[in-house]
Length: 290
Image 1 (cartoon, rainbow, N blue to C red):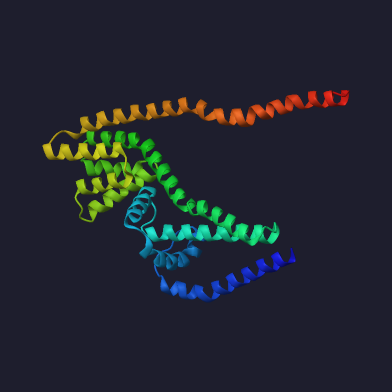
Image 2 (image 1 turned 45 degrees about the vertical axis):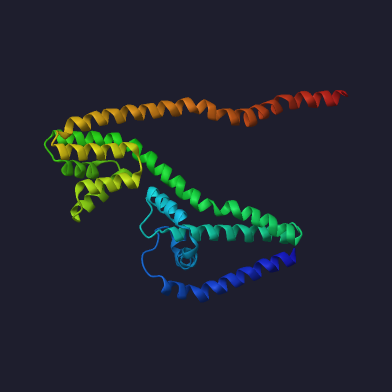
């Protein structure tokens, strides 16, 4: 036990020494914006340095996949593929070190078994940062789908009141609920003010969100602008369709809820209930001599 404690303290001392010695160099090596979260902001210089070391070894297919996931998650522009890979390396390294310390220092597992089991635990932990990015992207898409029909209604009302499409989008971005869709509308308007065409800015929004309703909205706007059609009836029909699809998605989730409850009922609630009911009966039978 004392050997394990001394080993841990020696490792912490070495880590702190490396931190204080090398952190100024890392801060000078990477300058620029940092993430808003405090933990990531503290570790950002190290992620930058480690990401630069990992960058040449990232395959092109993985780089394209990570770029798409970062875009869907709506992360800050400072996040690159190499930062996700660096986070995966850090997660795997921390999991390996903690598991090896516990197994070898406290449980007294042989060195070979401890290292092997720690490596087996590090592999799934390396998957956690990417899974977090993917989960954030799915949550962001679900949030956009919930807000999209309301945004279409606001746009239709503004267009029918006499505003052009850009003015209607400005009103939707100004008075719409706070969330990723409102941020995307502001991004589109900022691109238009920077000189990008409206169609190209909307197409880029469709690429960033990767949602069929947004792509359909962009297609309707492009066709109406190309053919000179009245945009209000088209948007009204699309808003009604998206509202109906939202109700269908809600009904689908409500029908899936009983199926998802089967596992906890069968493996958690029912066994616990049987144990509570059977324990007094079994106790009395044992006391009676059965």
